[in-house]
Image 1 (cartoon, helix red, strand yellow):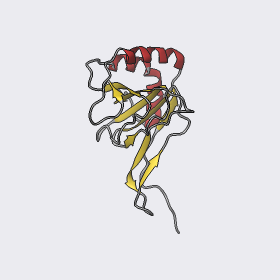
Image 2 (cartoon, rainbow, N blue to C red):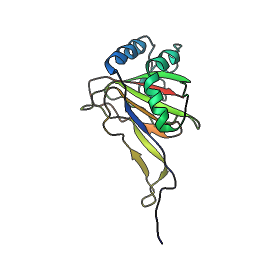
Image 3 (cartoon, rainbow, N blue to C red):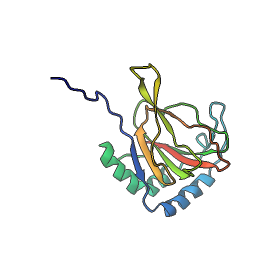
Length: 174
């Protein structure tokens, strides 16, 4: 007998936010209330280090969508532990990083043109057995209102924004 199977599996939950136009307005209002700056280790505008705490509002806005994702993740009662917005203008990108060893992270695409922008790029936590190179994955069919939830330990980055249109994303951790 010979068989092959995956030893490891890393889930990425992709969903479309329900009632997107209504929720987009609320999220943009929150995003516009933040103070955006660029830190030395980032090449995007972010309010990560700002003093605004969005957790409760975002949890409420995305509650139904988070509950649906919990079913696919196999975890219940996910609570947002921190949240921030990122704005990427022409030429800006986010360097490779992760969100820690425990928990889950999320990205919601708020202002995103799928014809001009690229989504987050994920890096496998192991290299190709054949070439030894890192393995990258780009989620498919990302558009405004797409919500991605993934394990926080997964390294990820964004490619430089080649568009004159600003890309705005909400990022958060559970």
